[in-house]
Image (cartoon, rainbow, N blue to C red; front, side, top):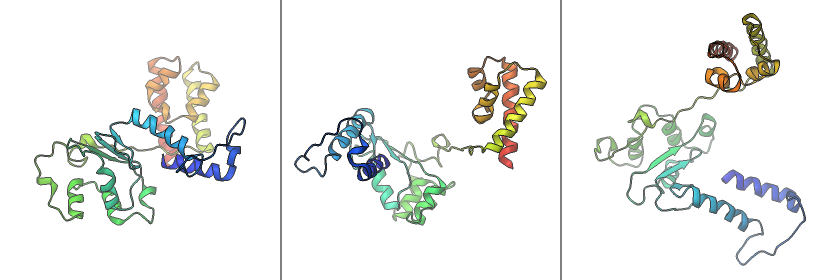
Length: 239
């Protein structure tokens, strides 16, 4: 929402009324309104948010009761800011969950404190204990009244993703050529368009079920193709 709002502001400053299609219509700002753009945009965000995410904290100052999940889409600058953001969840006394989304680029920003970087990279110590230690409180690990602690204490709470880097044109060409040879040797009846799709979306077709879903092939051939594509991907990515 933050970046969408920023994008709208930039478009307005650069294009003015030209950012809209159709007949230009101007409207005088209402009392207390900064300009004619903010009010309708604010309302268009608030309505779906209130209806669809009534149990979430959106991190922009809203307090929909009761809030049971706090989602932070990038690491805050400091631990103080993080506590302020996650503190919007669980204010009614019920169990609340805080989910922080981040990547190496996020925590590499110079304005992110070392404490936040250490908290994100932590893979061994209880996160509640880290927070308590930072603010000078006792260890949370001894609190037996906490039903759910953190992803370090409970592996079922882990949310780790690995992303396959996009292939360049040379890598796609190499995979395409290898698939064409495999198809020819195995005498598989498949169109050149399907081969192109398999090569261009190789990481998706590592799963044999996706090949079965997209193409009319036998399970044996689908498994053989997915295994071949997986090996080709490993070779290309390791180069």
